[in-house]
Length: 229
Image (cartoon, rainbow, N blue to C red; front, side, top):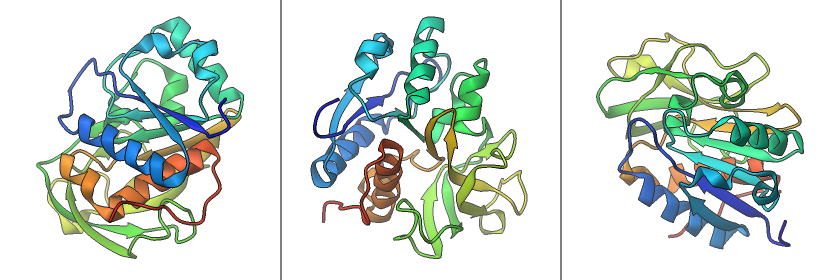
């Protein structure tokens, strides 16, 4: 890897295509400039080889969807994580690779459904993690709110919990995590369900959340995330 940690942003879609992907790439590139990591962005699954992945500290699945990697590419990505590298999943990263059990455990839970975009309240569960400690204890924002097929694994640490009483259409009840992190198979996994809208990627608080997740996944130790003013 380079002396400056390098992040691969992967945004291939084989299902629903989010219009916010270009804004997300631009935002991560800006976060990299301000927080000391380089960014490569691709939709080419051929990047998933041992030789290419060796360049990176972490891979971000930015609103991927459907079946995006073949068997050899999946094996290379598994080896990447097993070497101690990181994964950060954003929004529909949980609507990806339903037939790959290892990936399902990596991302932590698969997407089930969502209602219309609307405001809701998020309750911060972790006041120490870099991706949540700068967020308000009760965070009100507008997004597309995912419900999941299952709860994340028991060893996952929940960062944010969605208050279903604050919006219409939730299906998980009082325990509705929307961001979590965990060690997994020798590496690190961080996921946020937030980030459907292009506007998300210009929100200061969301950028601190996203930037903190990427920094943690990449093993970059910082106390705070610097975002553009």
